[in-house]
Image (tube, rainbow, N blue to C red; front, side, top):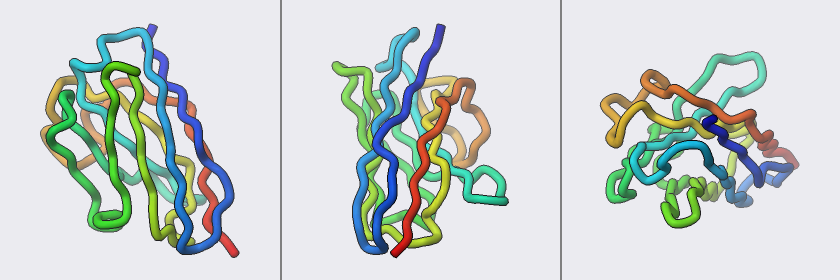
Length: 125
């Protein structure tokens, strides 16, 4: 059974940083691309970032480019999202997601077949 468990969310002031983690189990983690998707209050799902199975290639939404960094440790079956220079508009529930293959085709929420339960990130003074 595929399981994705996010952690690391919380309340942070504007300009602050958070690091999200996603512990994966139930599949060969190193064989699949992974991604982060978020949902702000009252809005739809927004694709944030993705990383290929080997970790060499990454993709970012324009809204987070230059502030967020996605990474993975295939030995630890863990996905990360380092978030710096956080803004109030980054407030959302952040979901870790497993992609259907080793490489992401499009920078969208399409193609992800398993999702975590989400972790809340609130950016507020």
